[in-house]
Image (tube, rainbow, N blue to C red):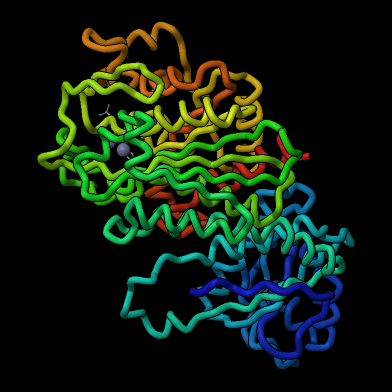
Length: 499
Ligand code: BES
Ligand code: MN
Ligand code: ZN
């Protein structure tokens, strides 16, 4: 499925093709559909009765070639009790409609956004529906050379028909389509295999954000060595791929206003290094740059919608491989901050990458807040599964903001603890700290490690090992990577940092 085209128009039933109609539990047809039903001799009302369609939320009924008109089909979609629908539900509705139309191989359709109860569907909800359509239609299928039937030819042109069509179109173009494009970029980056997307290739993708007005600075190996990013460099030294650090700046706010910073773990492939991982499932570690992919997709979204805010996105790109030059367990590295780290396990590499990026951001950007994202620990999957990201923070306000934004967008987070007693678990006999604290509380000790590099800056760490990849199939996503986090953080920025 290629990207559906989205258009907006006034409510009108097309003479031919496919029409999608929303029907609530009272089973009344919205005005435009009721008029159509009258001209085709009550075919829709009869289908509803004969099929025992109850208008329950997100149920569908496909009425093929209704008698008395020239339409191919009318697809009825249940709205349940429309007054109860939240923003998330309208997104889901878009996903359900797109899923149905794709299954039916419908190439063009009009979605009638009208309610029978006389309530208008506002522009915001229409834009949510359009976002749901785009998210659901996404597929990472560029490497399939043999398609089933003529799947590759399947396209979808969807017209959203509503009274407030011009406001909806404006909102979609200016604010919501950019979010959709940001999520798409994130999904593409995560799904791309590591032989194709190495550190330099990822940096080149980030560089493209310059077209949107983002300033992109790329630090190479020489500069990193000179400045002393030894924790990050230690991870990279076992790979042929050179490390890259990318700093993206979007200056949409007032001059001099402290930016909010997003930091991402970008391990393009994590073999574990000398502490090599078992073979089973290792292929998933192409997604170990998920945090960096979210930061890049978020910057794309914020710049595309010209967000009135200063934002910095910083990603550390390395590959964790075992070779003769690789870092060993027992090695001691001096991080950019000057703090020394004993490397107990080379597979706990994400924190070694992030600690130097966090320190650099804290020192050079002077941010109002830092949010980092990392596919950091398998332990967070054990704790929370794929349904919540682990949230660790030194700031209760940030905790509340992220939690609320999660509930609104459906990209939810669950707060986990930090404390001095957990912090002790990473003290080292040989250096200032060690890079693992043992099996117990593995996600917490990883977060405690990061905390040692952010000083007093309000900071939140999102452990997205469970949410970034291997995503469950939902109405909004069928791909391996859902792009989790882009919508959450776009909302955080919009609600709390944007003027
Ligand atoms: N990238 C992994 C974490 C991961 C696991 C992400 C599963 C996504 C799915 C990380 O670098 C890692 O290997 N962590 C180790 C830490 C341990 C050695 C202290 C882990 O979780 O086992
Ligand atoms: Mn690892
Ligand atoms: Zn990793």
